[in-house]
Image 1 (cartoon, rainbow, N blue to C red):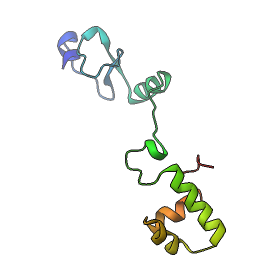
Image 2: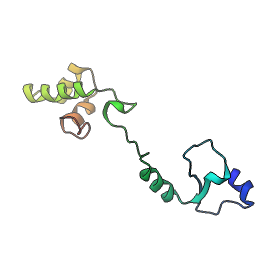
Image 3: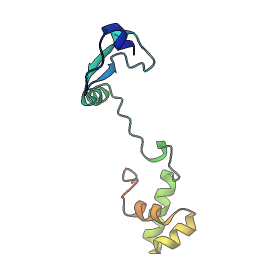
Length: 109
């Protein structure tokens, strides 16, 4: 709305109003520019705001790096099936399968 009021025109189709100052609540028209979604994504990467949490830093994570290592080690030492390991550690079957096969938690040795 701030861009529209300052420029007296609607935002053209296919364009978005982007913040140059990276302060979302900011509505200073000097800090607002038009650009595509790709421009916005490129800006995000250029400014290092492409945080992609993984492992324990992911808010949905149930496992820890320590537990991932224990699960992999346990599977290697015992050869037990995923279902048995899942019960032993109190986690889901899919979680064990993905951890053991390094579909998830690939960054953990």
